[in-house]
Each structure stands twice: as C-alpha cells, then as structure tokens.
Amino acid sequence: MRCDTLWHNANLITLEDPSGGLGIIRDGVIAAHEGRIVHVGSAAGAPSLDAINRIDCAGRWISPGLIDCHTHLVYAGNRAGEFEQRLQGVSYAEIARAGGGIVSTVKATRGADDEALTKASLPRLDAMLAEGITTIEIKSGYGLSLADERKQLRVARQLATLRKVEVVPTFLGAHAVPPGHEAQAYINEVCAAMIPAIAAEGLAEAVDIFCENIAFSPAQAQQVFEAARRHGLAIKIHAEQLSNQHGAQLAAEHGALSADHIEFLDSAGVAAMQRAGTVAVLLPGAYYFTRETQLPPIQQLRDARVPIALATDCNPGTSPLTSPLLTMNMGATLFRLTVAECIAGFTREAARALGRGERLGTLSIGKDCDLAIWDVEAPADLVYRIGFNPLHTRVWRGQPA
Image 1 (tube, rainbow, N blue to C red):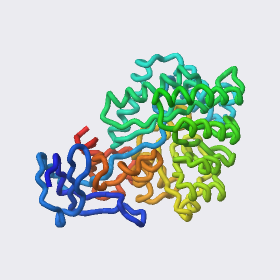
Image 2: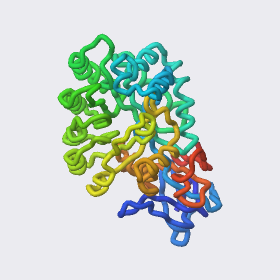
Image 3: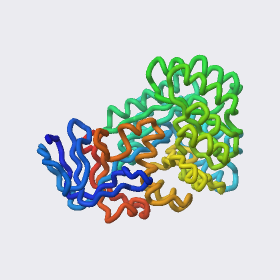
Image 4: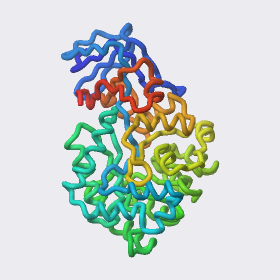
C-alpha cells in the first residue's frame, strides 16, 4: 500500500472502542495519503506500506487532533473588572442586568474592525493550537447586529486561512438583547433578517441561542430553531446554565447537535437528548470561573448513554480559558469524569457535537489525518498534569502544523 507518511513505533489512542474506552493500540502504526488515514493498527499486523516519509515516534502516544466544540474566540475588549466584581460577591446575573457582561463585550467588538479583531483573536487561537487543537468551533454573538455578526463570522473564517486549523462557524445572534432593544422585537429581527442573510452568504453552519432567564425564553428559542431549519442550518443551544428553562429538551426535540452548559438539566431533558442523539457539552471552565455549585447530572447522562463532550468555552466574561488540557483536568476534578471521558470529550464526542463524527474524532481509516503526538508515559498524563504541555507534534491533514 502506497502512502505519503507513515508514523511508527507509536502507542495509539484510537477512540475506536465500542464500550466507550480509549481504544489503545501499543506499538501501532498510522499511514496517511492525501490528508486521510489509510491504515491504522498494530505494527505486527500491518500490511506492506510503501511510504514517502517514515516517522519514528520513539514510543510516543498519538491521539486524534483535539477538537474544541464550544468557543467565543473572536471578540475585542477585556472584562477583568467584572472578575473583580464577582470576587466581591456580585453575581453574573446582577452584572448582566447592570449593563455589563455580554453587552460590554458587544460594545468593544462593534468598535473593532476586521483587522483589529483578527489581531486580538490570533493569540488565543495560537495558544489552543499549541496544545493540540486541530478543529475549533467559533461562535459570533458579540455583534448583535447583522453587520457586526457578519464581521465576527468573517474573522472566524479568516483565521482558518492564517493557521492550519479547521474553523466551524456558528451564528449566535441570540446571545443577549442589544441595548435599547426589546427581546421579542430583536428575536423577530434575528429570525426574519439575520438568519436568512447569514445562511445565504454561507457564513455559519449552525445557529445557537442563549436560553436563560437573563436572555431568551424557550418560546423565543423555538422561533430561532424554526428559522434555522428553514434555512438549512444546524441547531445548538446554551441551556440550563443558571436555571432550568427546559431549553435542552426543546433543542433536542428540534434535532439539536448539542446542548451546552446544562448544570440544571433535569431527567426529562436527559431523556430528550438521548432520544435525539444530542451531545451534552460540558464547560468546566465557566463552572469554575463563576464559582457555580450546581453540578451537571453526569451520572444520569452516563446512564442514558448521552455522549459527553468537553470544551473550553473560551470567552472574555465567564471562561477566559485557552487550554484544552486544563479543561480536561477540570472535567475530571470538578465533574469527576474519567480519563477516557475527558479525552473522548475533546475528540470523538466533540466531533459529534459539531456534526463531524464521520470524518473527525477517532483514528480510523478514511478519516482526516488530524493527529496530536504526545510526549507522555500514559494517556492519563494528558488529564492529570496542570500547567504542563506535552505536545510533541500537531498534524493537520497529514502534515506537521
């Protein structure tokens, strides 16, 4: 078999395990041709592989490239002052009602042009790539007008031309009510004008909404979902972060790819997600940063076999986090996820949350050859260590990146 590159003398974390484990292969090989995996397996059982490049991994571990399935990476401004307020006892909801929170980032983002937004966003992206990210979702939601939402999504797509990474853009126009607007009137604008324009221009793949008592109601979320479906866009939701609005259940009933945050998710929501195959995206960075105490219903999700993904939720107000590795550690320490769940959460399940499970997230023949090669003794090191980056090589579409 001819191939472009063969990685050998490696230990593989394939994530191809029917029981949900890591699918480990010791002394394994991976072969890639034209950016796709053409062989993966043990060295002992490998066919004859005629490779242009042969790379000896010296016993290192190879996983799929990491996938961050929930970020707000493109924004301007800084909210360190709100962090100080929260340390003094002011709640996230109180800050939002006083005109801070999302709205303060909206003002800064509206005031930045494409070049300034790109310059501000690249260091955050580079920090993630340095820890093995090969695919990243980037939401809009800090424009809250058609022109400014377009700008965020343009910049998100521009980042993919500046770095070797796949960017998945999501339209989050229904993130907050813009100053001077009424919620229902704004949702009508999102559905009648913004979603059609974003879809027609191919700027986003999915539509998201913040369904919460400080944001938008379930009825308004349903309106957004119906508009998204009419225009061929997938659905995601920020749900049950601060209270149980039954948003995750509603989103699942509309075939949502994922429901994210979900600390206050109830059993009916879990059941709806299970029926729909909706992925639970847990965001321990936001849980930690806002000092939340309500844990997501992890065991219920496990028992129902709802896929569990992890993500950084990189954003300026509640999760200024650019480290997937630290996020894995938080998932383990705060949510008591297993090592296998944490690694799967940033690979196999994150791919499902973005509708890319068919070509990303596992080391499998036919999938894109996106790899992270690690200088670790065992997979648990990726979750166990804090402030330690063992990435040796990031591979994107079969090429070192």
